[in-house]
Image (cartoon, rainbow, N blue to C red; front, side):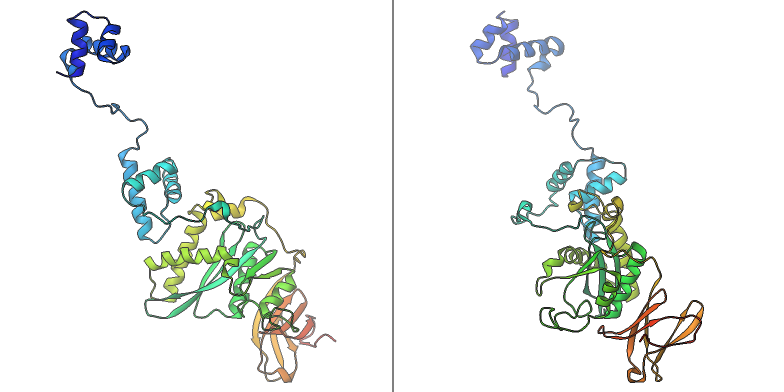
Length: 387
């Protein structure tokens, strides 16, 4: 005989009060009342023990949603993409499914898809610099990627420090000084010139260490340094052997290489296609924890952009790469006419960079040495150097 049956029969057969039955059997009066009422409505079925589990669980996640969460986890992981609760929550939101981050994490844990991680350094102890506005600071770096053929490819990126928006990402057989100036100029024309740049001390970015150990030597900078100076852009370089100074783009390389490992490329064109797709996903679809779950592209457009400390001249800028001919000249088209700039025979066969702004032209070598400056006159074919 179950305890429920004993309590009910004490009321129905012995005619004891609820209070007396509760006192004799050490239970609450309300329990006796509930069991008696159940017997009156259900009969002897009230004697059977009941599960304490509620008839329904209104807060339980529906099975189709749970299955979708686990599918997203699997698909994102196999694609080499971030598959944490934040990212899964963002994907579900785009599908019109609203699920809390904690619920997603609990489902992933219950399914055994979350590996235990060693105790991490608390976020409260991090000292992280972030630019206040878009284009206040761009970080740049390049990394190595190996094709399935074994060929080594170098990938260069330009990343906005404030929004983490990846503004440029391209693959090259080798990153050179020309690669840096070309990619910077292309990115700046599309997104506006930044107030400052932050890179390491690689020779493609700066020659300051080669010019005096700590940048206190004499002589001009390389082409990139000269280009920044002409635009009034501040140049910042990390401490030697301290890659954490460029922490945001260094962290991005980890994210990118995880994805590329899941999608190896057999050619540089195939790799570039993969980089373009990943940049679009990274900027527009992947929420960033440091941005309060916003995407980099959204954060980049949220507030007005910073500009160089010296206001950018609205005129036209051009960068031209050439080799001085045997007569000591280079030729370029300006205002609809071919002009010939006389630099001097001693510099014949020298590879140069011509920086043209409106009617002003500066010709420099790849190490930043200024060879000549010109004020272009469209009415003359031959252009002599400025005094």
